[in-house]
Length: 312
Figure 1: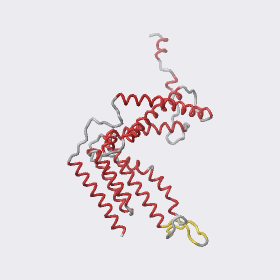
Figure 2: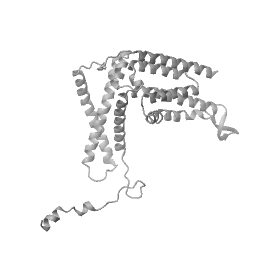
Figure 3: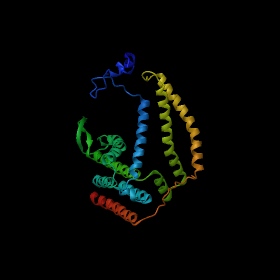
Figure 4: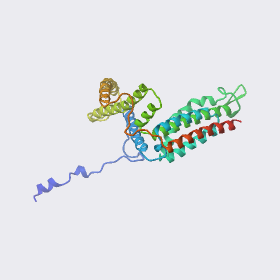
């Protein structure tokens, strides 16, 4: 082999040279912050992953997955009414413990279930009801003094804290019950159950179209952003040009949404969709479903009875 042939087979020097990588501690390299558009799209992608994960969970053979969707829906409504009528925090905490047991029996990841409940609505509810814990909003016995006003202590009152805890615990229980229903029931079967219990057809049509259209538009926006990013040379700048791109993307998205709405509706109509969700399996009540319905009624009665005795 000649010297020229050996040089042609030699690995280039630039491939052998090491470059400083991003250190986890941040001491080497420079970490770039993503823009608001990229963060929004990443959030949309995370939503898609959660939905796909929910479909996988709903297909498992857990306790609630075995129930008829109609029984689950009516049972959740009954328990929501019972939780709404409860006026004592220990009662609601006991109901929340029951939801955790049901989540474990349905093979749901407990960490994922707790995060999905507590990282959103209950925290925001706590922020909303926080002013009600102060003495100048809810009068009562001050348990934690923050300041004095004309010689009178002002701060958190026991009555305000009790009311705020009641609201937050009630919202947490309600969200937990709804999350249990949605995570253990496939979307099509849930729509079919809603129609079977008498929910109007137009309502089923609207939420069915909205559910499919959200993910369709998320995919369209992601494709548009990736196409622009793949044709951009250099670092992405968050300036007037980026804002103009967001405005143009919004306008193009509205036009595409109008066109896709017609195509999606025609495709659904061509496949026999008339506003009712259809499933391959027909609903049929079993002894297990009847037993679950009886247990739900007994639990609702126990909630109301126990809450009545705690109130006295």
